[in-house]
Length: 97
Image: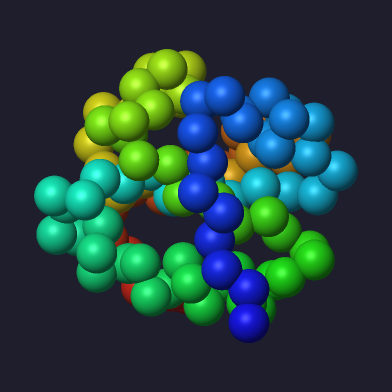
């Protein structure tokens, strides 16, 4: 069973920009209730897409540089990155579908 990787500002270039597979980044914070609501979904996606998509979580309080790079203004926000470029963004706590 795969788990999301905890992304940091220092890891961003190597883990996201240089990734050879798409990357899903869950921007969250420990105090965010809706973030906790989608956490099990993010866990499920890590298992379901293991080897096909790199699933990562980024704590916006501890990694503000990357959050600012993506212009994150509200959380939870899920961003999908392919070939180092954002290709999709989902705002708020939404169902898995």
